[in-house]
Image 1: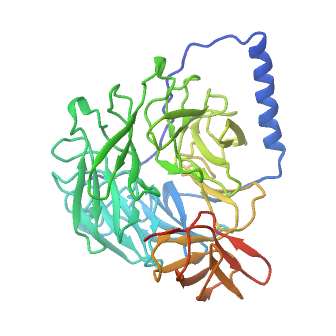
Image 2 (image 1 turned 120 degrees about the vertical axis):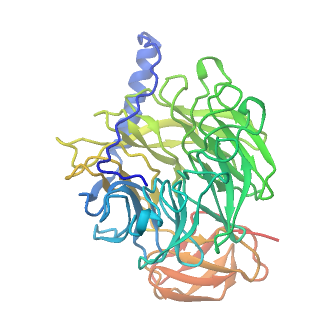
Image 3 (image 1 turned 30 degrees about the vertical axis):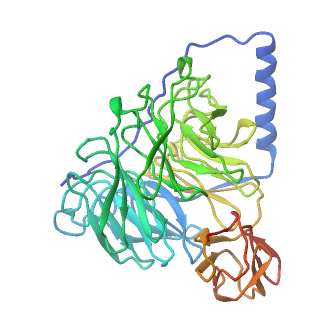
Length: 487
């Protein structure tokens, strides 16, 4: 059993490249970049610190997820009643409730030190992982109800993998995730687990010569429109700088890209964040190091596996980039753990043509009451605002929950985002009471309003892939993603 008495993360300084003096056109470009950043900063936006963790309610928060009730749910790595992490609920107004403190069972059989946030499943419950604890002491998969009842679904034991740093993905009626280590190869796994807790190992990393497939997956998975899973391995690949991989539900593996394929790793290295599939169908992600500026990159990969570096960081605009989220305006939003104006991280926005533009720099006030070193990806809630966490800082130095409004309006999202005709779909949003119609790409559906934040419906006959719309007395709300109809 691992006991955590005090937990504090310090920034990992990315490798600096040799500095180059700007002269001539370089100086002009620097001025233009500054002006572009200032223009973004002048756009109407509001940053608020909603909560400072004090240890009793947790310390060092992970990422957030929106629940069916409109509140935000998350985990902390440490703190709580037993000092081993918590599950918490927080309203968008900042009222927090601790739902569960880990290590409440003998020998921490319920898990300890979760390093990932939660996933809201279609059954209305949340699912997640702990990195340590469980009967095998190398991590767990758990379910927790919105009221805080926790069930341990699985405890990892050798050789099925150990230390799941990432969260889970729901797909095909089961859950999918990664482990950072363990297994007979010792370099991590991709696993599938049923709601009843039956675990199947789908892939063992370092199964190819010289670990060309990758090592140590730190982030979780996504399921793309083609039905396959995509993710990243932090190390391994042809240059030992990490990989992007594709995996079919049956376990057929493809190494899509190996980083540091370009001179001086201009394409990036150490992709320890996850990937997303953008509206254009391509895969986007980040690297923690490398790039032309030396402090990490944002990359795009097309279906043919061709990588394009969309943007790079130079330290002044951030370093150590977390996973991205695509906003309803089509742009990408993210955070950096280091760098920025005060050296404690940024919130940034960038277009598909490049960037970034800094929206907020942490530690802008003495003693960092606004937070510092954000490590987890942002979420855009259905009220249109972005929410996130800082791993340190705040009034009690235990981290914060914050919100950032950039003027984007409300929308709806669906659980799941793909389904067959007749399949039940949950619609999440705000101010849904009194809704008068629901349609799938123009095809009307029968629905039930459960609350002001939740509607249930089913995919109607004749529906085609496209945006879902909900008409309320005040407005028509569109889904952030196209709902895909599965044959």
